[in-house]
Image 1 (spheres, one colour):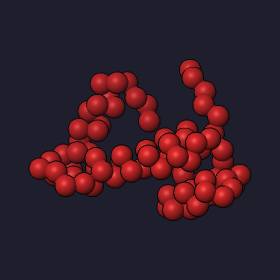
Image 2: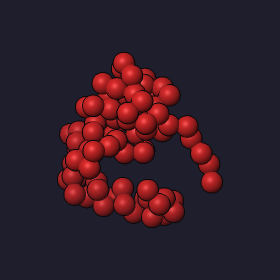
Image 3: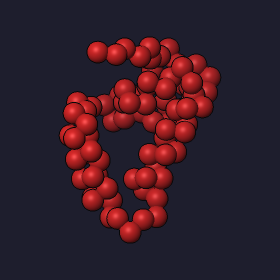
Image 4: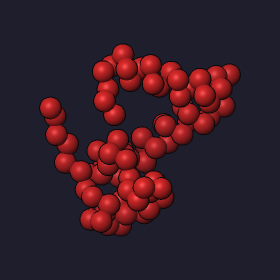
Length: 81
């Protein structure tokens, strides 16, 4: 299994801390799928922007269907996240 170094929420500083604060989940942390970008806040901002565009941007595909597509793609890719 691959391992990606991630900076914990409590260790975030500067721009990374700001991004973490804006993306804190109700359970009190930031999802690992975002934290894998913690060494590069620029790529983290890009990931968040892409996600928001795909899931919330203007589209003929309703949001619930977008979520269903994401689930199917994750299942096909054997993604455990």
